[in-house]
Length: 102
Length: 170
Image 1 (tube, chains in turn cyan, green):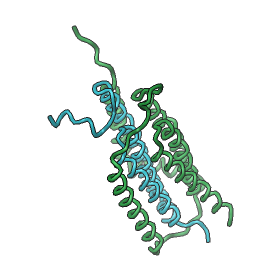
Image 2 (image 1 turned 90 degrees about the horizontal axis):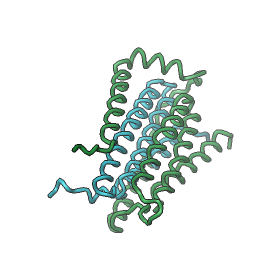
Image 3 (image 1 turned 30 degrees about the vertical axis):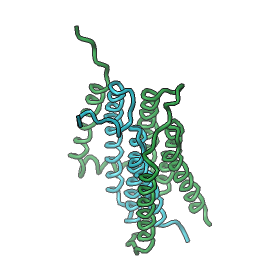
Image 4 (image 1 turned 90 degrees about the vertical axis):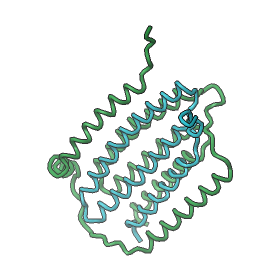
C-alpha cells in the first residue's frame, strides 16, 4: 500500500491540532505566532496534496504561494506589534494585556 | 515498503515530533529551534508532492525569513540570562479541556479522512512547476499577484513604523 492522499491529510490534521493547541493555551505572544505558523503550514500541505492528487493542478500551488506571502507579511507586522508591546509592558503575555478594559 | 513510503514516514515523524517539541517545550528558545525542523520537514513533504518551487520557497521564506524574525522576537522580548525565558501556560483545567477537544477533533478528522473515497486523478508529474506557476501568476492571478505585492510593501512600511523607537521630542 503506497502513500496516498489520506496520509498527507492526516499528517496535516495532526499539525493543525498541535498548532491550534499552541495558539489557545500559550501565554507568550511569540508562542502564539509559532502555533499560527504551524496551522498555516498544515493548510499548505492540504493545498499541495489536493493539487497533486487532483491531476497535478497548478492552481493549488498558486494558492499555497499566496498563503506563504500572507504568512510573511503577518509575521513581520505581528512581531513589530509584539516588540511595541514589550516596550510598553515589559512582557508579552497575551492575557495580561488588558489596559483598554479599564 | 518502497522508498517513497519510507521517506514519507521519516519526514512525517520528524514533523510531528518537532511540532510537539514546539508546542510542549517550556523553553521558548527550544520551541523556536524545533520550528526549524518542522519547516524543513514540510519542505521535504512538498518535494514528495512534486512541488519543487514551493519547497524552495518554503526554505527561503519560512526558514530564511519568518524563523529568523521569530528568533529575533524571542531574543528581544525575553531575558535570556534570567528565568523569564519560560513561556507560561494557562491553568491545568483549561489545558486539559483544550487538549481533549483538539484530540477529539484530530481523531475525528483522521477517521473521516480515511473513510472518504476521494476522487483522485492520476497524472504524470510535470517536469518543473516553475514555468506553469509563473504563467498562471501573470495571467489568471495577475490581480491577486499585484495586490500581494502592494500588501507586502504596506506590511514592510507598517512594520518599520510600528517597531521603531519613538524619538524624544523636546
